[in-house]
Each structure stands twice: as structure tokens, then as C-alpha cells.
Image 1 (tube, rainbow, N blue to C red):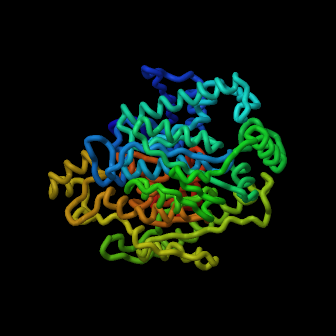
Image 2 (image 1 turned 30 degrees about the vertical axis):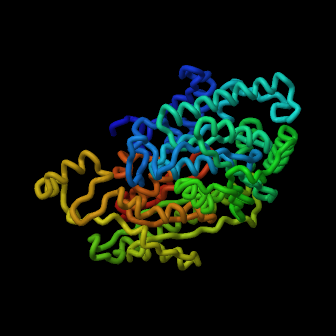
Length: 506
């Protein structure tokens, strides 16, 4: 790996994000508080989502990029600021991170600026803003504090767009008042930056409570609290701290309003180029409800040839039963934990199952179909076509295709062997699947070939193109991707009595 930023996700070493930098005339480092906040987040799990990693080599973070430009900007678009709008627990940060993930995947140089991180860095650990900080009639001291924090964040944003060849900066904040949003758009226009506002508007109390329960009350502030009481207290605290909020209705601004987790959308203007239209299309496939994604390998086949498309062997059939038994037991355990945390016993998360059209992937799901789960076969989930390299050893590849062998060693992500596909080809082919994945509201199990799982995992965990070809998904594990507002987390579920090849072991 050239940059040294990543390790294999299953061998990932804890890394420390270096904290945000500020440009007040000259670039200067923010207070150590920002580093401490990010350090705490980064060490929470070894299988960490790298969406907030600093970009050292942009090309490594753009698995589906189709072309490059000297300016670093794509799709004939200039600088764009995306500004979030909405009260806490409405999914703003989730939208920010998801959009960052998608745009970076396409090769658009994107960075998220979370105002909350700047606020915590400025105040220091464990300190809160004054009670009138968000009020319209705030005290002079609160207004000064607010302006200081805003200036630090915006200076970083300008530096990213003007000096780091950034294209999309996402400004993640409450932005509660119409006049304040107009002032922000005018300020960005002076810097030749187009502005798009994204509001996550929620008046469905059940969605708000679900978001609070899954994200907000896990903080130390609510340690030892009853879950229902903690949810109620948090919502009351938000209403008291931010009493003045105006939903977006400014016809002179560009905005997208996502209503109740994607049940309805309002789009105003946003017609100034291909990239904004692409952003609108992505957001209309996105929702803010939490759901989990599981990855599992297809069972063993007696004939593993790409062209043959062989059925499951007897060992593969037995593997599929152990796989399903393990997943069902794990989901039941998680449901019991959900009930223990105050969730409803009748609120059961449904499971959707995707596979490719290949015979062994479909046959691996037969125990699930017996249990009544619906199966969706998708041609885009078919494995990478190895072309002329199929079934050749490294020595045979080196001998038969010496030039291709050297190219593959230099860039195994973009290189393709004769009559085959590269991982980049696979990533581009799977973009419709990415959008469907974002649109899916149920828990999702994807059973596929290892090459497909590598690309999908690379998207959800923001892996570099250097890492994707070497990701390993043994058959004795189910990989669970757990979404959180700031990043995704990954964990492995061991399948008992199974080795890495999917064979039974006593």
C-alpha cells in the first residue's frame, strides 16, 4: 500500500485522524479538542469506516471515477457548497456522510465540515454551549462565540475549495433561520461557490424517537437512564435549546427537502449542471432510517469455472444451512437486545436477500426461501470476469502474460487481463446496485462472489483502490455493516463448524 493510511479491514490497526485544520490568513491547527474528539471516534472499532480519513492520494479514494481533469473538478461543474438544514436527530449528519461517500466514490473531491466538531473542539471536552446559544435573541457573549466557531469552520471550507482543488464542501449544521440561509448563500456566491441546501424535515414522532434511540442516547450523558425517559429528555432539551426553526420555503434558493425519511421530496431550482442533478437523484434514493447489511460468500461448487456456472456441491448445500442458522440466531440475539433497550417486542426488522443470477449463489439462499424470505436476483452482482487469467497460477500468469503481470502488480484495481474485467469495471457496472442499496429500507443480506463483496464493502467502508482487490471474505464468516450517523462499523459473525473454505469441521 503506497500511502500507509489503511490496513486490511480485518487486520486494521487503530489510526488517529489528525484533526481539522483552519486557515485564518495562514493555515493553523485547531485546538487539540478536535483531535481528541476524532481520536475517540477512530478507536471505537478496529473495522473502521475510512470516510473521514484525510485524502493523501485522491485517485485511491475514487473506485468508480471515469476520468480525471487537471483542475481536479469533474462533470464541468465548479465549486459547490452543500448546506444541511434541520433540527438534531433528523438525520442531517447521516445524509452528509452518505453523500460524501457517494461523491468520493465517483471521484468528486468532497469533504464534510461538521460544525458540531468545531464547536466541541473550541469548547473543550465535556463542555456545552450557553443555554441561549441557538436563540434568536442570544446574548452578546453567545453571538460572539457562535461567530468565532462559524468563522473557523468556513475558513477551512474556503481553503479546501480554493487551495486543495476541492469541488464539493458539505457544511453540516442546523442553519435554522431563513435569513441566515440567505446570508450564507450570498457569502458563498462572493467566493464563486454555488449553494445547495438540503433539509431533512421530520414531523413523524416515531422516526425522531428511532433516530434518538439509535444515535443520541448512547452518549455518556444518558448512562444508566431508562431508554424511554432518555429519549423524551433529549427531545425536550432540543426543543428548549433551539426554540426558533423555520423550515425551507425560500423560492430564491436552491434546495432539496427530504420529508419523513424520504417519504416525499421537494426540489426547488437546483438546475445548474450535471453534478447537482446527480446529487438530487442520489438523495431521492437515500433514506435516513437505520438498517444493517450482511455479506456472505456463496457456497462451494463442484465446478468453479466462470463459464460453467456450476451448482452447489454437497458440502456447499450443508454450508448454506449453517450460514442461515447462524444468521437467524444472530438476528434473534440482536432483537432481544433491542427489546432490553426499550424497543417494542412486536417491532421485528424484515430481511431482504440479494444474490447474482449465478446458480450457486441462488442455491445458497434455498434455506432462506424455505423460511419464507423473498429472493431478488440481480445480474449486476455477477462476479468479476477473469478472462484469460482464469485458473492460472501466479507462475503461469507471469510466464504467459509477462506485461500484464507487471501491470497487475502495479495497479491490481484498474488492470484487466485479456477478455476480462478489472475491479474498476466491476465498480462502474455496480453503480445501479449502489443506488438500490441506499434505497433499501429493510435489513439486507447479499450473497455473492468474493470479488463483488470486495467492491460493495469498499463502498460502504470507504476503502482505497489499493485495498479493495486484497480484501478477504472467508466462508466461515458473515460480515455485518452497522450504520451510524458519523460512520459505518463492521463486525464479523463466525459460522460454527466451518473453515475458511466453507467445509464442515467438527
